[in-house]
Length: 378
Image (cartoon, rainbow, N blue to C red; front, side, top):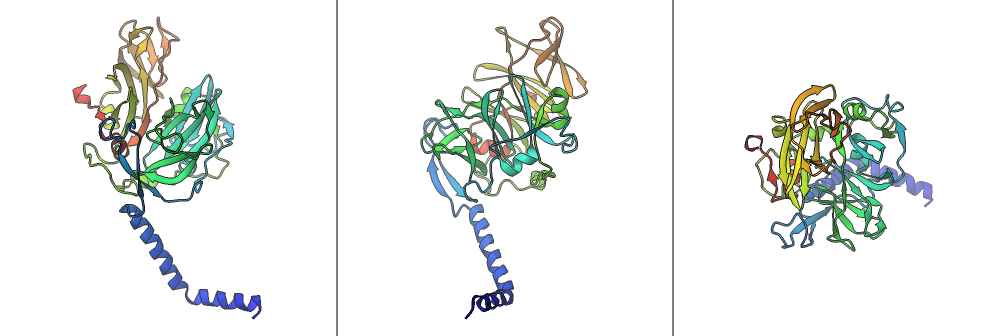
């Protein structure tokens, strides 16, 4: 039998049984996703005794890890290209979210609708090698320093999930890393923590107002809206179901998560909407949370300035910013940048703290002993 004849017979057989093949393919996919949903295909790993996700201090927690895609099935961006803010005018809409990073005058924006497709961007900003990471299932955009114990790491997407959150790997040691925790969970770096870098998740319009000379990750004209927009507004929470029962807030309520001195605390947006400026203490440190409900922007700052703790009163809204007045000198401050813009302290700058947005179900699954801010108890 010739190859051509065999090929024709094979094609005819496939065509005649196409409905059976489609049914079998559907069944395979259904079994796969049901198995993932009900945790049939995962295996357990044990976190380090120092992990912030442990249920009890010093007692390692067992968690299940699931493989949904092959390694690099979602490809990280390792050689990012940027355009000027003016050059991005046709590609960026005012209300799309970006993760903004500013280090030593180098200012860059990473659109969420690009990050949702690649999940990791390995970059160097202001001389600092960083990984901009994003898990669309958990709505967690977190930036980390890529230097660990004197070694420069490059991160990729492992194709695995733990409690619905992105599991990364580094291409130098093949260790696995949990995104929300910033912790190595297997391999050479198990128990090692990455250093978080302060970043701002906000709308493009708000970021551009504050940083008109910002560079923007080039979309190359191939990205439309965020492919997860339907999921964000749906009632589903991840693809693996819930793990820790904590119904203090709706599963997909937005929170700003902050960890200081190993003490995690969540600031629900619904509470921040009641109080645009929050003074609080975490791990013995005085902090300030500023929230602009119009753009959905929440930023955390260290309240200490020149050895004193600054206290603010809300003054007014001013286009894309909140204007604050400090109680000690009466100076006016840009709330979202943390810079004094008028008065005796003009030019002073508060230190922005690393904090990130998250759906409540994801934050509470990992940080089971978290504190939660309530405006009425402030």
